[in-house]
Length: 98
Image 1 (cartoon, rainbow, N blue to C red):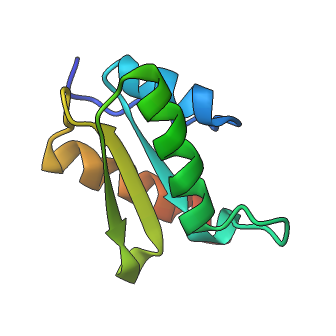
Image 2: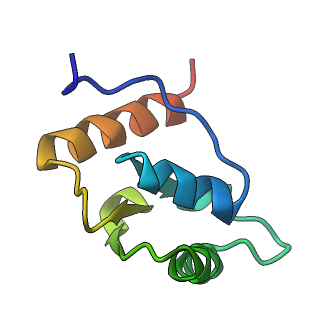
């Protein structure tokens, strides 16, 4: 079913994120994925924004401070609220210790 959320997968480069956006999907950056080498939420956003601009993709970033997440999507193919909510729920489940 097209409205179902698939299993999350990690992408490793800004070009991978842009490719995901071009396929009509979106990306979620959990802020705890930040590292001491400068890949913090703002840096991640800057890098993804530059890659998207170079590829001609108009992106939107939504920071969700209470969840420590940033969602990015292609404005031409925005996800529904329910799709983003389901993605956040998946991230939240992976955060909980087993």
